[in-house]
Image 1 (cartoon, one colour):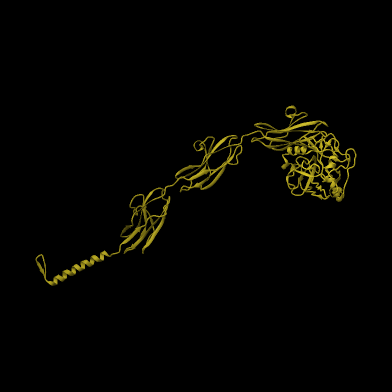
Image 2 (tube, rainbow, N blue to C red; image 1 turned 30 degrees about the vertical axis):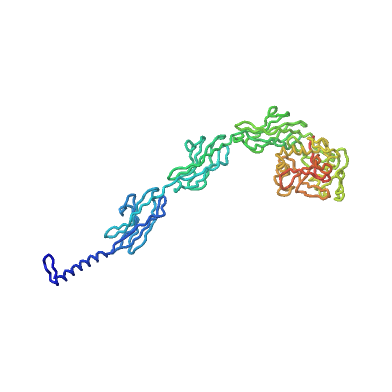
Length: 545
């Protein structure tokens, strides 16, 4: 029996009551184990300036499945699907989910939750908070200024760091005051990381400029070091007076060269011409066009035997520049030796040289010079012996290259001299003399030095000289031929490759046995110096007294 509130139930009713309790408990148990939708949100990874990697997991899809799942995010807490969402659609089994969230704002706090949704409602994972990275300033250096001219220069820089954002702009500021980014001119030069450069044009000559590279991104602008440069100042032109050519009894061609315009147009060039020194103050101006480069003027009406003085000039906006003063003498008579050989001559600076190698066989007094063909006989010569030969004992060579003489033959018994002029006629025709080493030096100094003089003295082309005949221009008119030489053992050598010419000076180290010669080679432009045995056979050129 069960007694409840004074009421006594029979045992049958007791069992019915217990059954009802068990049924209620069973119903509660069924409700407790019904499956629920469950999602979770992972920490955001790979956070950058404008993006981050979202992650999460659908742990349980519930009894009815999921129609939509993904992520929702916002700038405020607890975002819902009414905020910004990334949706992936239907899912029927548990799964991991991830996606890269892009287009964010740098240095900003965001809130994100994974979500799932079906007809019964919305389900959210835990809220995750993350902050995008903040941009830094980019880094840039200013490059050295190069290619500076009168009105232009090359400037630039190098973007070494982006600062987290793609550069929207890079370039240089420049102006005529320090701090060009404040009061100068901005010149954009593309975008991106790395080197950049450009040419500034239309600058003012002789002016100091300041340059600073810049680069700009979302965080702001950065600047390289300030650098400065000065454009070239306009100056007078550079002009040279070159050797007179085509000299006759009554005319000559005057030659000059405007090497540089000084930064301004050469509006006039030519020569001052006179019978007195300092022709620019005593003589007549002869115009020969304008601009840079070589120029010439044929002057006729000369008087035979008169010495003339000339000086090239060039005029630009800064004034008039002058070349060297040189003198020349109108051709008195053709140069004819005692054997009736006729020679060309050329004025080079203040010297008048033979423009061909000597080929005479007699001294001016009629004395015959010893001619030796035999190598054995030549090898027996002493430093005091006078002799001559022609290359390979072939008269056709002699007609082109002239004769080869021992030093004693060239000197004709005179004592060594290095004066200027040497004062030694030697084997030369009357009125002419054998050049000293000092006179050879005067020649190469006038032509720009030993390293370049050979090219200016050599006959141009490769008809006479072997290839490549380096540097040969013959702009002096000297027309040096590669006649070779004869060694002291009587062997001929180097025709086509080089030529050697005697001076009137002995070698100081061994004056009894050796004298000084000057030579040129086919493979360089040098006027070389040669201390050689006096018994060697070399060419001869003479200079007007």
